[in-house]
Length: 68
Image 1 (cartoon, one colour):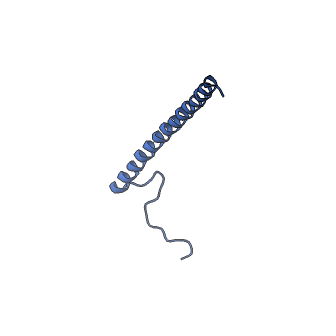
Image 2: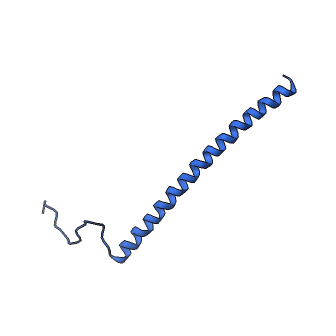
Image 3: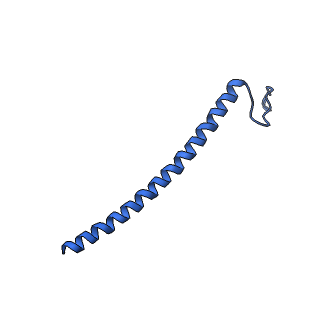
């Protein structure tokens, strides 16, 4: 295999690796955005529980289960 052919093969492989790296970077960025959103939501839920709030539509009075 000539040097030119080897260089071309390496350039092709490098181009594919650069594309794969960019795709992985994009996926990681989207996952981080989702994680940040989930963490913010979780923090709001914790704050609501600590403040004594109940989820929307939840009945806060104690109910005896029907089998008693």
